[in-house]
Amino acid sequence: MGPRKKVRLQKDFEELVRLTQGRSSLIKFDHRGKPPTYYKFTITLTGLKLDGDRAVQTSIHQFELKLGSYYPSEPPDVTWLTPIFHPNIRGQAVCHSQQWSPAWSLADFVIELGDMIRMDKFNVKSPLDRKSANWADKNRQHFPVDQRSLRPPEVRISIRPKPKG
Image (cartoon, rainbow, N blue to C red; front, side, top):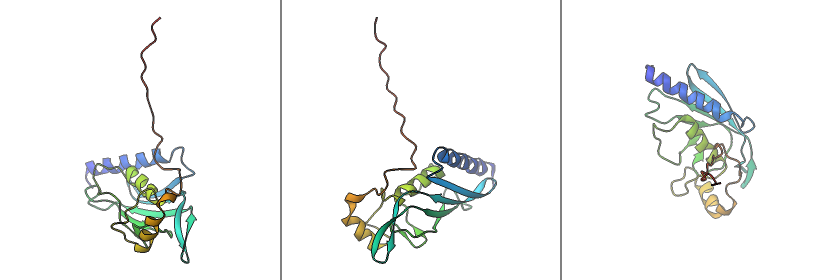
């Protein structure tokens, strides 16, 4: 592994650690490697799974991210480990909603997966799970199913002129 890749992997790890700070009730992860090339995430956001033929809420989601030899030129390999009812996730396979860019950090990617969990991001035009896509298309008014997000809160800065006087 070259020095540039080691630096990138270390920065991704550090950014993931920062993402979890203050959000330990929403996101946890285990990792392997120095710097890490394998992660197992547990995300506690409300999403959906099937119970028979009904979509029901579920709050614990797990997935693995493996960073291959061509990362970050190629996206992380995602394997979904828990049941989920989502148009772009079927079984263990995940079809990410946007094109991967090496400029994305791993934390950005995990935030995007969190948005997918809560049904804030999905694509019904190119689904992996057609049943979920049809259901989601008819129930858009119920999304997102969780108002919480992994996204850091926005910081707003306002500049006002100093009062004269």
